[in-house]
Image 1 (tube, rainbow, N blue to C red):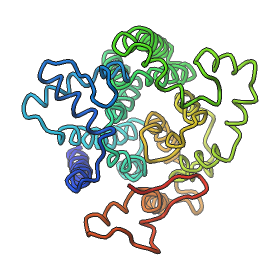
Image 2 (cartoon, rainbow, N blue to C red; image 1 turned 90 degrees about the vertical axis):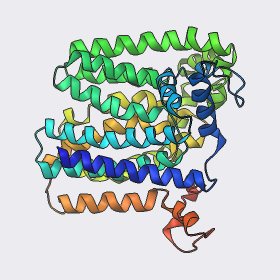
Image 3 (spheres, helix red, strand yellow; image 1 turned 60 degrees about the vertical axis):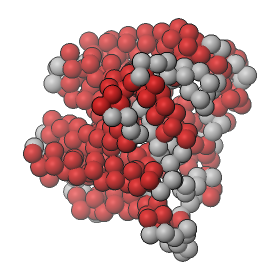
Length: 382
């Protein structure tokens, strides 16, 4: 276990160095790093976190209560590097939790370490670390911790982990509800009821009271443009789900959907070649809320491995990987080939090209460092 903590520390340090170097070289952006930096700094001074960018209180943005305990770090010394460090440590802790879940499943040390490596090499983890700062990263180890608590029948720890998830972003309440559906399918009735209850309750409180109280009508209409093809208001969107289902179906069954699903699954595509039982796929129930929001959105940034929108899906994909690893080796699929595939996926889909900034070059023509998928309009560049 000590070696796992050392690996986590090294991995987190690498992530922190990468994001810090990017910031030092003026490659970070005001949206979203400066937004959260300003909010946490103002909270540390005992002032209202009114954003100079959005023009309203930060609790009216996403209901991210987690910003308040983060402000304690700024009381020690106000620095944006606290946020980068918290992000790196959170993503690193996700790897430790994957290892713990793998051991809990009964995997050998070697297989558990492979599961951890698959998580660390999943392109979204490295990419989101470079994409400024987002509180959702804290929810990744919290989700995994909640799953570990369920399987160890640790009710208090489960509720605490869910509380951390809900404090990161109001919309994560939908994924918590989806997690409840999955736990129900797993026959974890008590935990399913808690997840469904807390997720539903917090979503109603956050969207109907907390966010409107701090941001007014903007809290309800700010993100409606992401789904303007489905309606001009939330009520109209819900109505169109039933009266004009072709609008929804045309978005779900499209080339964009195929491209996004290919991006999500390509680093772990070998799971489809293994004879997994139905139970191994039930974690997908928890991903449905985030997946549906991403697929139905007009904004293509919700369908890539660069931005934060796919983070709620990641923990549950890793559960499928953990269930798949005991079936390896099988034919050409061995532990070594799985690791090589994960490494290849990292090289192709991660933002490794940021290294060109460090060596002082604007571009490196003809290499994978400038690679982009033109068909999906996903540009892997700063």
